Image 1 (cartoon, rainbow, N blue to C red):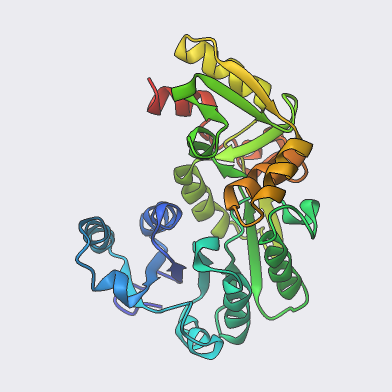
Image 2: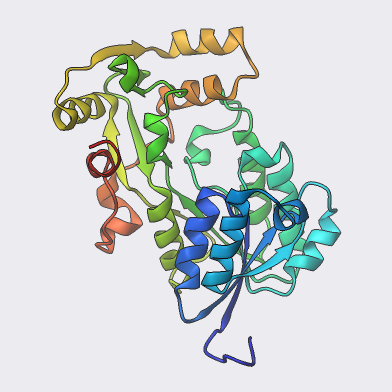
Amino acid sequence: MNPLNPAKTENILVLGAGELGMAVLRELAARQEARVSVMLRPSAIDTMSAHKRQTLEELDALGVEVLPGDVVNESIEQLAARFSGFDSLISCLGFVAGSGTQVKLARAALQSEVKRYVPWQFGVDYDVIGRGSPQDLFDEQLDVRQLLRAQSRLQWLIISTGMFTSFLFEPAFGVVDLAQNTVRALGSWNTAVTVTTPEDIGRLTAVVLFDPALVNQVVYVTGDTLTYGQLADTVDRLLHRTVERVEWTVPALMADLAAAPDDPTRKYRAVFAEGKGVAWDKAQSYNAERQIKTTTVAEWIEQHLL
């Protein structure tokens, strides 16, 4: 507890200040009961990059303390020592940190004195997808769940969000390709996908973290759940165009992946095309049950493309 401000009873450390990390940090910093710190690589703190300097200035304005730490090069023991001064630990470090990082962080959290851990599982339902999926990094997410479920010292929360809404519109991903006036279905036009914006994930993470009823469980949040057919219809309607519709079947995407087995984009396309564990009913999500408004795909298009 911060003796200068006894109202700040929850001491929280966030790992990473990328797009998701900043969204989480903004929401946590706005809460009176939270004292918030962020751990960044020393190179990100002593940076000359204008973008990173801007991030550091925003963190300072938010009252977020910046701590140096290196999840890649430091040992589990060193990381555990860094984590031990905090009540809650939230990882916003994704797969870009490299293979093995998610398990390393979970082991460090377990060795530390931190009371609660929210691992970086802001994505799909790895339990439903299971092991051996086209995206091999997903197996490590299951290893993290296994570690957390096998112990009782450390409380944990997993927040399932689906993919970032904006990812549907990334030209490189190939689903909504406005330059080619094309929408491509992953799997089939009836295959569904759940998406949520980073801003909504940040807001809901702050709500979930302070909900005393939630402990040691997976929480499903949703910005929108829709089929690729509904996505194409929405693009047509809002952008006043008629897109070309191309179906990328599972066999075709698996063949693409076999031709370039290390291509992460092809891995993601294939796993989303299979349609397992990548969508859930918005009406039954945490935010819908509590009547917390989230951004739909139609609203995202109106905000970013009109």
